[in-house]
Length: 309
Image (cartoon, rainbow, N blue to C red; front, top):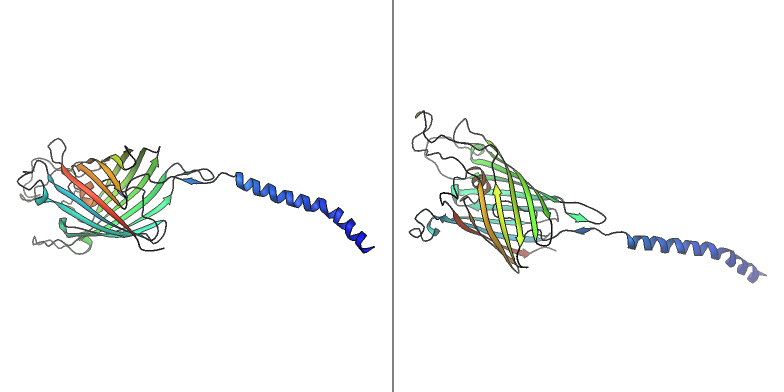
């Protein structure tokens, strides 16, 4: 009698068990057919185009060391100055990514004995599929301190020696070969040459990259300043500016070059009219002109080391 009751119960429970199994199978099938999120990667070869930042960041636990070098100008007695080496400027940076979205770094350049601290942080990432994001957006903030010694009698405390740069990098990889970005940029200097000068400058950087081979890419970068400080060619008031101040009108930085990737190194070779290596001088205080031949050959070299998990 007990066996019969168990058999009858099993028969009645079978349909419900089959329905439950069917629901599980349908849920699993639905999960498998749900589109996955695919993220864009390798939008740029390095973390910088030339002077502008890119949306690229070292991975979590990766340390990056970068050498940024600018030779002297072609029109400044190039061969007498040993092909510009005698008038070269160098910047060294060291940065580390403690997380997948944050990168922190330190830098130094010989021009005005400048030290800098910077942070780079990912806001969005270009993707398609379950999550569709057309662009990658990365923020960059940096502070610069000039330790240059002066004997002009002007009080230069810590605040007057500092300047700041903020960039919002909006980048998109349009295809496997072509990438581009817009970079709204703010440059602020606490101390300027004249009281009439703008302490805060606004620029709209733009850059593009075209991959020629899997290891080589052509790059171009242009950073127009929207409210540059301008000075007359002849000073109408000799008392307003010292004669030896020699202020020059500022120009927009334009750079062209190519990147070469060789395993753990990225070599970036270029020609630019911006001699300054640090952003405040390359963007807001650039006096070089392509038309006058005031051009500088330069390179950026980066090397990464995995030091964390």
